[in-house]
Length: 218
Image (cartoon, rainbow, N blue to C red; front, side, top):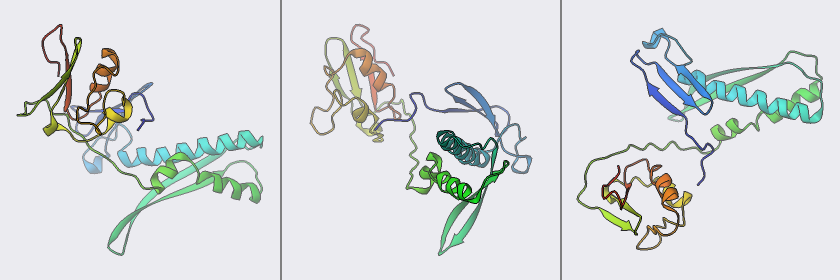
């Protein structure tokens, strides 16, 4: 398992009601709710952000294809909206995407670009099977702690805290291998790499301490 981004998108709640600060790799922006929902509309709401992903991904995908073909189509716009449809006891969210050609273009190319739009990565994510996993970090004490160490570093595993994110053994398999009994091999990588990976544990099940400090780091 390899994440798309080296650094995750980070959101922080603000003192102002419903306002959130979203931090990404190159800056930050505000998300909020409209007044009808109790917010102040200081930034796009979550549904708008979702539609923005579809719209921007569509435009970028179309522009890449147009440039590759060398077509003279300088101006395109995309409208995005959504609604919920109840069918057979299930609620299905339908996203409508309208492509607007602001420059003259023949119908054959329009239909081709309509097909290309459906291939944008965000469309594929939404149309394929997706899951949202939620983790919470715990830093309390547990009855059971298992320690794996060498002369430099000790990794501490709290089985009761483990939420099975799989980040450890998919991202650093030379150290973490759940298929063997002693599943943490602290000699499989440098202390620096082990520390970097342990800090990615979202549940607090894995912690470490450097033996020279003789003090566990949470």
